[in-house]
Length: 402
Image 1 (tube, rainbow, N blue to C red):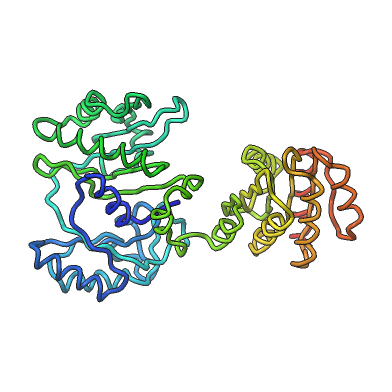
Image 2: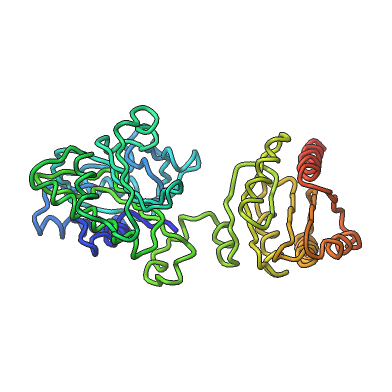
């Protein structure tokens, strides 16, 4: 689950992470009032930041004014704050991470314009190779970390944290050295790193990314913040779950979340319904191998019932780009007859009009096949994954050419 920058900063602030002063705004009037309040408290320079779940906002462009400024604007007066808010609120911002469709700006963040001496990069995440919570820092702040990794990988310093010892001063010193900090800034950075680690552990975060981390005098601050959480742990964090902004999520993904389904929309035209993330990935790969393009990643899980399968099928078919469907189920915990009943129920309810290929294997597979064969529906049976992929790609191309 993602949250907005202002929410991430408020969360990190509770753990002692230094952040510039800022106030969220849900309208232009609120943005102006926020700036007036901050001005009364001593702020002389403002930054108005569009709040969407995507990076690259400053370099992004608004669809209604592609030649104009991006989603992060420096303002010297209250009038400039108002103008910036009016230019952003309700408009669609396109960044390197949103894709060409962009995202509508429905929230703003008015922050203090601090005097930045140096920008750095910092993130906390799980290193799958070592199974350690790992810090990554770089002196190349403000840049996409992927670009740094590609062009100057030597400028990225990684420090894995021992899960028993936790974050130590020695870990902090390695990170501070990696950023070439000196003097009081070293101790301040170590304090910040410890706070980030504790926030990561306590909240079951998937990643905490500070880009840029900035140096202001001897103070080390988070100028921007991105925090993602493990969905599977949200039941332990009701307060964090309440931060979810569903307007930032794909409508089909929101519906899938309601039914406890794992769904990610893609750009292809072959819908995939699979049980198990590994099988889902393999299914998408083999569809591409045979010249097709998957329209989604949808994992119904190991304990899906007929109702959940029906919901999954309807979500796939709600995408107008889907011109064919592949159901690929291995019946381990999940039983093939349950899948078959769900597929039939959903196909009848939505009046299936695209080719449907089904491959079943495992528990109750014969019962499942019998249910499909006697359904009266035009279902294409497949013997194995290779056969299924070839058939759904061919059937989809034929249907589109008709």
